[in-house]
Every structure is written in structure tokens, then in C-alpha cells.
Length: 212
Image 1 (cartoon, rainbow, N blue to C red):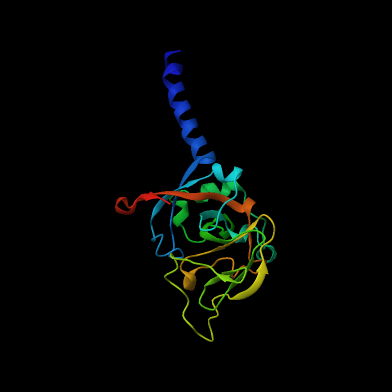
Image 2: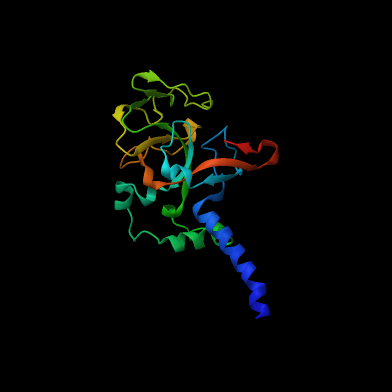
């Protein structure tokens, strides 16, 4: 009985931490430069997974979402095997499995981008990566790394597409180096059900820590 009493608090704490990670907050790291300069490679952030389920996300929110390789219809057609289960993706995200080449599946990845257009809006992106909403150029103070002007790099430009219901257009702040909605072959817009969470707090490095 004494052993049970000792283990019960530990089991409760373990369950509480696991529940928080699953339903409320989850740590993530930034593996690429697609969100430069706002997010640096190897930044550590917390994503919040609860409140956005009960309210609409807004323009400018930074969100983490499932890999397009798990939901884009044209990318799914290219698969030669079934989509991996969530348990497999979780296992493969753990060290040392995550660093072994060839074991992962791109459908298990998560992406982080910024919401720039909302459901019902008519959106365009020009050759510099600048966004126009309903014929008005979007003010993007975070957009420092635009695309260079080139005949061979059109920066995923497109014109006058309406964002479907319950969808968003999500782009990386580093427009010249971000594989985002501009390039997804099955459709440019992200359904809200694919969103895992919203960037909430940067906890590392400490000198740049703070809320988003």
C-alpha cells in the first residue's frame, strides 16, 4: 500500500504533463529559415492548442499545421504506401530516431507559417512575394526577405483567388525560401482542421524570449 501511495502522485503528475502537451501547450523547435527574421533556426517555442479551437484565427497569427504531404490531394496521389499512423509519427519524432536518414516520412512533419488571408477574401501574391487582399496591398512589417525580381523565379505568384470557407492562406515570412501555400500542387489554402496550434511563447534563446 505504501508503494501505491508513493507512485500515485507521480502517475498523476505524468498524466497532467502529458495532457497539457496534448491539449493545451506543446514545445516545438524551428528547423528551417522559412520564417526569418521573426523566427530563427533552432528557436524553441510553445504552441497553444486550445483557445483557437473556439475562436477564429486572425491575420498575422503564426500557426503550426500538419504537413501538406498528409492532406494535399495531388501529393497523396504520388504516395506508394499508406499514410503513417500518428503513433508511428510520434515514435519517429523521438531521438535518436529523428536523426536517422531514411526512416522518417514527410507526412509526419509539421510546418510553421503565418496566416495572411482569411476565408472569403480574394488574394493575390506578386513576383516579390507581396500580398494583395481584395485589391489592397497588405501591410507586412515582418516581411523583410522578399523574392528577388527575376524572369525565372516568379515567387509562386498568383492572382485573384478566393479563399474557401474554413480555409486560410499561410505563407512563410522568408518569401524567397519558404515552401508554403503558393506551391502546394493540390490547392493553395489550408483547412482549419489541419492546424495543430498557434505560436504562443518563445522560450529559447532567453535573450529573445517572449510572447507572440
